Image (tube, rainbow, N blue to C red; front, side, top):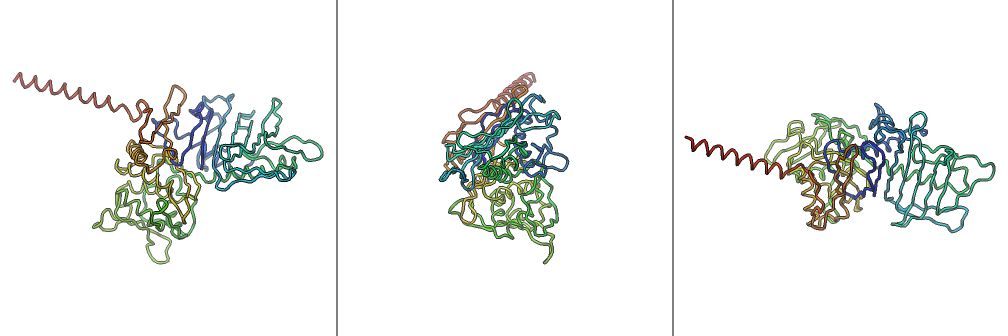
Length: 465
């Protein structure tokens, strides 16, 4: 699970400042305020980790990639190639990492939290190049070991640590090689040291964290009359939710069983999703069935209310096909995952938008096979109804204040600022931003004044008659 994020000189962000990421993190703000670019950088990091090109520090994308951010110049704040793009990522480890120095008997460095700090600048070819790379392993709030790879004034790379004593291998002191991608020390560089083998574990921890990030965009696929599934196991529901039905079938085929929180009744995956759809009020019943025995074609059948006939998902309101991928991804993703969603409330009735907050709270508290799933949701939203329900659940103590983080993005000139909203134990926002959801009072006052004027005009016209 991600614990914090900070980005400098990326797109609209001069400096986001430190962002605390809770199990449920919600980002609000006006259109084009820069909310989406925070997730876009994470996706660029993920596709870089998946790339087969180890020499490319940052894979910004192309026509075949998950996301295409253009050139490095396009990504830099103010398109200034003299600026350094930097980011900090912190996350918890599913299992504590144990580091031992083979040259120091009894030495042990164990931690359950990691942090990765990276600084990049444009090289002569205007491509991103790593200037500094630092890992930190902590136990709770105490740092137990750190590693830094940095360039000096002559662009020479140097490896250092404040907690660990690196020992160069015997022989000629060859210079260190360029890091691979933005997070990995090269095999040759690690071989320069007698006790640097653990650096592979740091890189693997970063890859594992990035691999557990999934993304659901604001535009989702239209429902289909027939879906095909041949037994594959999709990694996610897809950027547009195109694999949502395949994910349901795969999870059901695996026999996965979940409950909404510890102590609640356990259900099979398809039944679990159907129950949430019913609680949201969008349908009464939901099922995925093969069109015939032994076929790989499936149809999604729903009933809008108890006495209604069963129909295909294409023959009911559009909202169910748009919310289904959000529900499935929130519970389909592997344990310890981070799911980034843009506008999951789109095309939904205000009441359903409010109920969606309950779904996402449950997603962070759900258990599978008797164990907490430890899933994190980062949601970009424009829904006041979603926020109202979230505040209510905090007041009702159904979710802890420390398990929720809410931010408001606003444009200030050429830059974007991120303001954390302070929610107290009663669910009240203590620093309500100006124009958070538009100027509601101005609309009410304007309507009242207009109504008074029209009543006055009608009275005068009646008196004239």
